[in-house]
Amino acid sequence: MNLNEYQEKARATAIYPNVGSNFIYPTLGLAGETGEVAEKIKKVIRDNDGVVTEEKREEIKKELGDVLWYIANLSKELGLTLEDVAEGNLAKLYSRLERDKVHGDGDNR
Image (cartoon, rainbow, N blue to C red; front, side, top):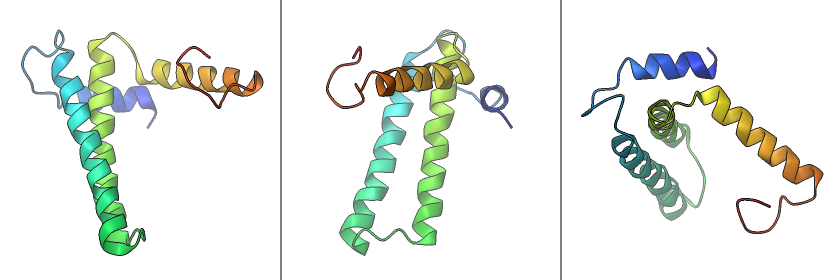
């Protein structure tokens, strides 16, 4: 499955107020799910000396899937495809790499 196929399949499961004209809901969901990923990682560090067990890996995978769902739906709300987002991100990163600007601060380096 490619990213755009995923996005369309994820969209079919989108049930929230004003789907199609509500970028706020998936933005808030993305923030929440990202926090859940961070919590799982934090607890791996606290409770298991940073060793990711297969059980924890599966839990984190599920949370990352939720993050991906919200990214897919937020992108759709903004009229973007996931492939456009991914391609744009790689273009930005490779441009920075070519110009030796990977390190440092600022979005437009």
